[in-house]
Image (tube, rainbow, N blue to C red; front, top):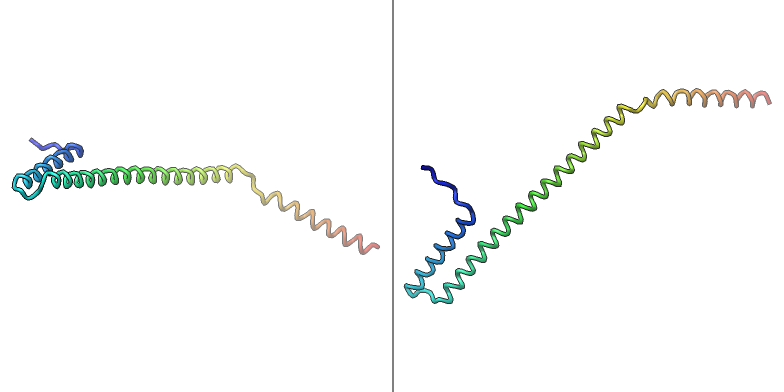
Length: 118
């Protein structure tokens, strides 16, 4: 049979059990007092909880950053697509400008003929 992966919570509980057992062995040998055992175990537990909390916070922030990056990329894509549609649907501007230039040259010719007639 294949072994099943141990969930993180169960693994942490198992490690806590064995850490407490190890410290209790030091108490039996007389190397530690009851207060030292409790202090060391509480320090170890706080350190583990801090690591777990830090990991959770890091994962949440990474997930939020990825979501924001995806939304920004999607917005850029949407803007590009909208600009392409607008460019496709707008009439050519060059056709409108050419008659305006002809009118301006006709006005200057009229002005010059009016000045020469005076």
